Image 1 (cartoon, protein in one colour):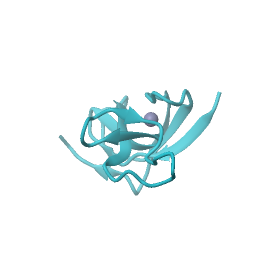
Image 2 (tube, rainbow, N blue to C red):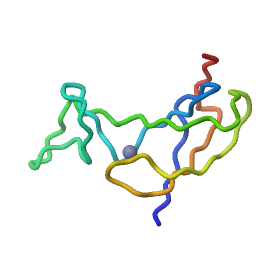
Image 3 (cartoon, protein in one colour):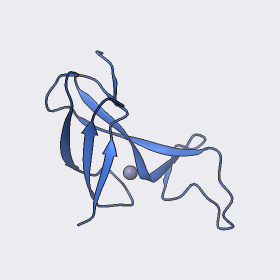
Image 4 (tube, protein in one colour):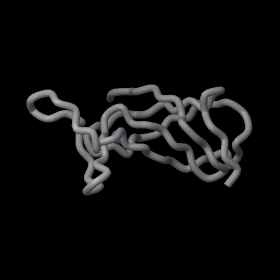
Length: 93
Ligand SMILES: [Zn+2]
């Protein structure tokens, strides 16, 4: 089983958000893809890294911690280690 480490972009009392290194979502059709490039290697501008979210088991935005989850990726079955640290934006809603 693959493992990946990510830093949470944002947490709220209910959710933890992180940018996925594997998935890209189209801003025009909202489908998810495993690449943001054409077969020729050109970057497709409207495919942005997918933001996945998981429940915040601590129900707080205080403190730094790590949490392990099964990924929500369509294209990758890895376990995700999500780090909540100084880079994580905290939102109380
Ligand atoms: Zn993903």
